[in-house]
Length: 99
Image 1: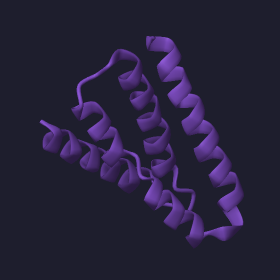
Image 2 (image 1 turned 60 degrees about the vertical axis):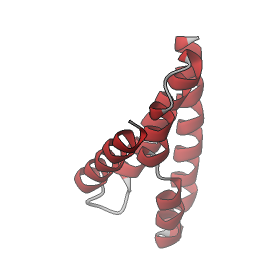
Image 3 (image 1 turned 120 degrees about the vertical axis):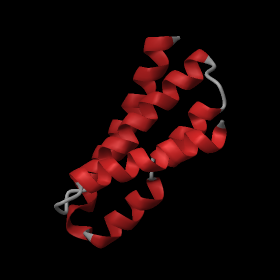
Protein backbone atom coordinates (compact mmCIF):
# COMPACT_ATOMS: atom_id res chain seq x y z
CA UNK A 1 0.00 0.00 0.00
CA UNK A 2 2.91 2.35 0.70
CA UNK A 3 4.19 2.09 -2.87
CA UNK A 4 0.74 3.06 -4.16
CA UNK A 5 0.58 6.08 -1.84
CA UNK A 6 4.03 7.17 -3.05
CA UNK A 7 2.96 6.81 -6.66
CA UNK A 8 -0.20 8.87 -6.08
CA UNK A 9 1.84 11.50 -4.21
CA UNK A 10 4.36 11.82 -7.05
CA UNK A 11 1.65 12.03 -9.72
CA UNK A 12 -0.29 14.60 -7.68
CA UNK A 13 2.76 16.79 -7.20
CA UNK A 14 3.67 16.49 -10.88
CA UNK A 15 0.15 17.53 -11.86
CA UNK A 16 0.20 20.57 -9.56
CA UNK A 17 3.62 21.66 -10.77
CA UNK A 18 2.72 21.16 -14.44
CA UNK A 19 -0.47 23.19 -14.08
CA UNK A 20 0.71 25.98 -11.74
CA UNK A 21 4.46 26.37 -12.38
CA UNK A 22 4.03 27.90 -15.83
CA UNK A 23 5.66 31.12 -14.68
CA UNK A 24 8.62 31.62 -12.36
CA UNK A 25 6.53 31.82 -9.18
CA UNK A 26 6.50 28.06 -8.42
CA UNK A 27 2.95 28.19 -7.12
CA UNK A 28 2.41 24.46 -7.67
CA UNK A 29 5.34 23.57 -5.45
CA UNK A 30 4.13 25.99 -2.78
CA UNK A 31 0.63 24.45 -2.87
CA UNK A 32 2.06 20.91 -2.66
CA UNK A 33 4.25 21.76 0.34
CA UNK A 34 1.52 23.56 2.28
CA UNK A 35 -1.20 21.02 1.50
CA UNK A 36 1.14 18.12 2.24
CA UNK A 37 2.08 19.69 5.58
CA UNK A 38 -1.60 20.01 6.49
CA UNK A 39 -2.25 16.38 5.57
CA UNK A 40 0.76 15.29 7.60
CA UNK A 41 -0.53 17.26 10.61
CA UNK A 42 -3.86 15.48 10.24
CA UNK A 43 -2.09 12.11 9.90
CA UNK A 44 -0.14 12.65 13.11
CA UNK A 45 -3.19 13.88 15.03
CA UNK A 46 -5.36 10.95 13.97
CA UNK A 47 -2.68 8.25 13.99
CA UNK A 48 -3.35 7.61 10.30
CA UNK A 49 -1.96 4.52 8.57
CA UNK A 50 1.69 4.52 7.44
CA UNK A 51 0.80 5.12 3.82
CA UNK A 52 -0.46 8.67 4.57
CA UNK A 53 2.95 9.99 5.70
CA UNK A 54 4.48 8.09 2.75
CA UNK A 55 2.16 10.00 0.40
CA UNK A 56 3.13 13.28 2.09
CA UNK A 57 6.84 12.51 1.82
CA UNK A 58 6.59 12.14 -1.93
CA UNK A 59 3.92 14.81 -2.47
CA UNK A 60 5.83 17.53 -0.66
CA UNK A 61 8.98 18.52 -2.41
CA UNK A 62 11.34 20.45 -0.22
CA UNK A 63 14.27 19.35 -2.38
CA UNK A 64 12.55 20.92 -5.38
CA UNK A 65 11.80 23.96 -3.27
CA UNK A 66 15.51 24.47 -2.53
CA UNK A 67 16.46 24.01 -6.20
CA UNK A 68 13.80 26.50 -7.28
CA UNK A 69 15.01 29.04 -4.71
CA UNK A 70 18.49 28.73 -6.19
CA UNK A 71 17.16 29.30 -9.72
CA UNK A 72 15.56 32.64 -8.91
CA UNK A 73 17.56 34.17 -6.09
CA UNK A 74 15.81 37.57 -6.32
CA UNK A 75 12.46 36.08 -5.27
CA UNK A 76 13.94 33.57 -2.83
CA UNK A 77 13.18 35.56 0.33
CA UNK A 78 9.45 35.75 -0.31
CA UNK A 79 9.31 32.16 -1.54
CA UNK A 80 11.21 30.93 1.52
CA UNK A 81 8.95 32.86 3.87
CA UNK A 82 5.74 31.73 2.15
CA UNK A 83 6.81 28.07 2.09
CA UNK A 84 8.14 27.82 5.63
CA UNK A 85 5.43 29.92 7.27
CA UNK A 86 2.64 28.40 5.20
CA UNK A 87 3.82 24.83 5.76
CA UNK A 88 4.31 25.36 9.49
CA UNK A 89 0.88 26.93 9.90
CA UNK A 90 -0.77 24.22 7.78
CA UNK A 91 0.81 21.42 9.83
CA UNK A 92 -0.26 23.14 13.05
CA UNK A 93 -3.80 23.56 11.68
CA UNK A 94 -3.97 19.88 10.76
CA UNK A 95 -2.80 18.91 14.23
CA UNK A 96 -5.18 21.26 16.02
CA UNK A 97 -8.27 20.56 13.92
CA UNK A 98 -8.07 16.80 14.26
CA UNK A 99 -6.69 16.21 17.75
